Length: 77
Image (cartoon, rainbow, N blue to C red; front, side):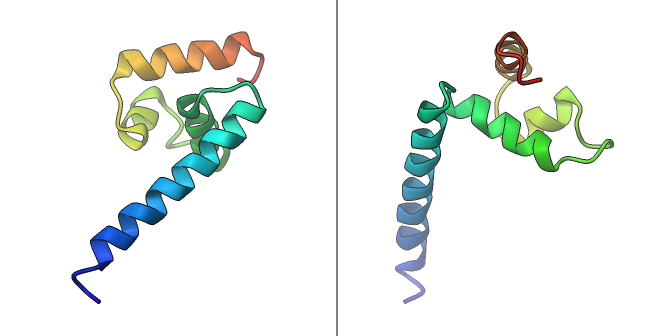
């Protein structure tokens, strides 16, 4: 079982990512935008900076900055 665990976790991760992508599409969002919104929804006032979002999201500051700008244009931030 232990040798199958990484494979099972990867499959589960893929299923969850597809579900999130579906939810994002239903709300006219990109997956990255939904991920940022989900992070900010639970972040406290000490962990809601651009740097914190970058660390969580695993993307560059430029990418996260553009994502945040897109969310601002949509009136979601």
